[in-house]
Length: 304
Image (cartoon, rainbow, N blue to C red; front, top):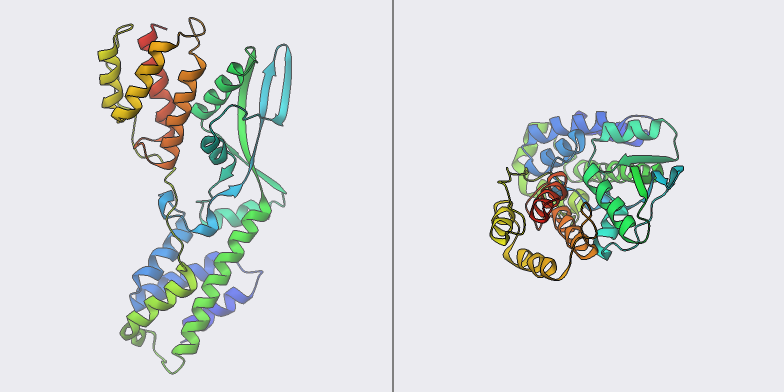
């Protein structure tokens, strides 16, 4: 099986890109009609468009927040961004990062020899962080940008994991079917190959919480000031659950806005909880749309 030998030789040579071995693996998977192997190799080559499919070795890596902000008359650049006051689940997810990029992209990131790499946060999340900091005693705080920072050693570990898994698979194929000389004859061993894929590559990797863009913001009909019927209707139109709507209605019955342009801290906390639901997929809306639709709806209700 010359193709299997070629892939093994590519994998044991650390100087060679994983991309080449994965491309050959995709050819192999197609020829032996291994759907599981083909799906995995394709996603590693192109990246994971749906983060719910992300393998364990790519998800929830430690990160921290850095950014530029204005405090009073002072400009602070590349400074730590506080997350005090956020709900624990939301804070935890902001300080973790999932790597869904293609293998080629990951390899290019470490080729620059930078010890750290930054990932810009969505503007909606940045605006929410700014509001949270303002509500925690810094009313003149202006957040310009935020990056999630991770060590490039994490990427090295991911690449090493992919290389090791693929090598284990190829070695096991070579060991069990060394008497088969033609690749096409491996088609007859589909169940055995499926088991090898599961034992060497999948190994119980489950799905992760969906952080992808799942739904777009819908058009918001005009909401008349203090009209709860309009408020509830707009929230329902954008997929907010009855329980979450009831919670917001109870909050706005008890809390007034801080000013003509700023909502109260409990309302902001509720928005943070909903962003958390958008991140983990329990509210079927994209992260970018989530904060924007809620802020727009509530501001219209308050007449801001």
